Image (tube, rainbow over all chains, first blue to last red; front, side, top):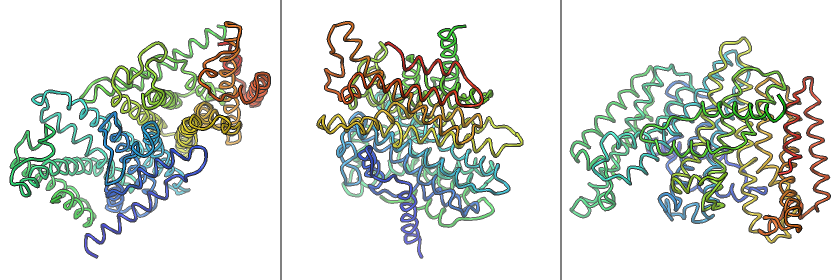
Length: 305
Length: 305
């Protein structure tokens, strides 16, 4: 199988794992469950659970204990989209070609559905404790699941994704000359990279990787997340260049301060290259290799659309 | 010390524990942290953490491992208030005499602050894993914290509080003759009782109580939560009777289907009595007694305002 076929297969697998942990649509609370499932099953690349499972494999993991965490991370990603789309936030009526959750179920139910997904994420992740069994190293296994849960909560919260969302909202209200490179880096690191960090770190922790390796993966994931975001900004400029013959992207139209605007197109391209090189260097520095994971990272960063 | 003095002291203690786990207001994400702390520090009876600690004591618990869970449960209670108050939900501008979170920080930031509190609740609860130490029974201790976390997530989610909130929203849209006794019981059990159940169950689990005792406490807490809610409905009628000489409470004005409306005032009073008697019978059925806990439950249910 080539890379694309393998990726397609792994996407289906990640979706199956996720579906297994979604609640049944029944009972007096049926409406909120419908809203949750509507949001989560709207498609998407399932990138975060795939990255998590590949990191788990890189360190020799081969059990099902990673699965509740795969589902949990995807639920967190999706709850953040449901709340981001709300009229009180980005006011988006469509996402991936479908009506957004609030646009189908109403604003109140969309707030509740997002809350329910975030809560369900931790409920699902905590199910891993019930999969530990009676092994001789039971305490170490408990400790690994506990650490994975702490990473999940940390990277999704105010020192991770929510921190980045908050800084992003506040940055939009700032005069553009006050949006510094440092602030923009903080936003990308937390809003975009934090859940990628969680994915790679949790996979490794559950496979029993040493702390030092987990630390390295955190750095690799930061690079991947930020390079991914800069590439987004670059494409917003260069895709338009190719198509329209002039640099008029949506960021420019929205007066958005982007990495490209602050650092210039050439420097941005160089930074993407340096960041991804460093990430790939880290990923290939361990005893084992995971070629699919390396290919995936390469594909994410060098994508043309 | 009499009951009131002891309660006041324990309220201060619960507030201290909570404050210890609140994040520092600094960094690029300062605004969301300010909004979180504003919501949580708006006062309140701190009933749920107090109940949790007293249940912990009832089963001989005397360490600090209950503290992160006390703070976590109070954070969950408060995030639900922040989101309930949103214009998209109840549209409340004031709570406990202060402006609600969205009314101070804006709707988008209030959505984010609620999310951040829910996330922080699980992050905080998971800190209990780092307090386990190196005891001989380490695996059993991990299992207890894991079980407590599972109870927390379950009772706060779609099979608990969020389920009740969803059913409550949907019930408001139903013709009043379709709001059955069964539906109303479901709403009260989940919207009101579920976090009380979490409080008593988690305290017991962390103290190492047997499963059977935890099950009994769940029943006691359901009784307490529902009796508390019925008493609310009763006071909405009888307080008005005393003051105004006629039964015009806010529920009546809002055409709200209440327990009293469905079951009548006399039956409702009898039910409160029967529910609390059964709860107190359970609480006094274990090897140890906790008189303060029994007094607190009595005070909660027989309150006159």
